[in-house]
Length: 238
Image (tube, rainbow, N blue to C red; front, side, top):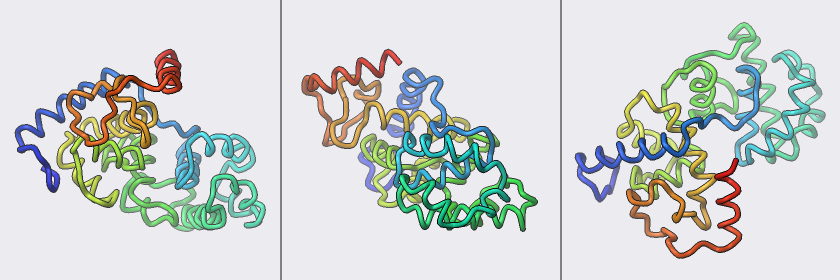
């Protein structure tokens, strides 16, 4: 049971089953939104996604991945050129440094391949548990943790699955509540739910499959603004 939970362990277990069932129903095909063709591309895309939208990252990597195919390609690039190519993702100097640092380690320590363990991945510059969890789950099908981005962090709090104040602690809380088998799909489903329904400023609670399980203080049950209604209807048709 996560800290300060208003539910008993038995009640929380029952709620988790309802939440997982609702997410499966709403997002049966949820998957990683970052476009990639292999482990290296997903690693680079996830590094770029820090403090940046997946849509922006996909725009940048569309050309980036045509130019750079191997870790050696990134290492050959002048730092200032790589910085300009990824500038629009924000924090581009640090990201360029981390990308080349990670590629350097891939070449020198891992034979040019992206490693498939948490212990090895988090040794790479710019790679923390979130990035490692994405790569492990999507590429290698390994559930060693739960991806906690801003969407998962927000939804976990609203659903009373965690009240912790850091992504690492939220992940630990979730790992203690969610059965291991759906960890990978759960991450993708909650991210999609956070983007489409459980939004930060105005959640679309009137369309939420988890509304009955949610007791968040910022629930919005009033009739939706016409703009939100159109967005909701557009999303349901996609």
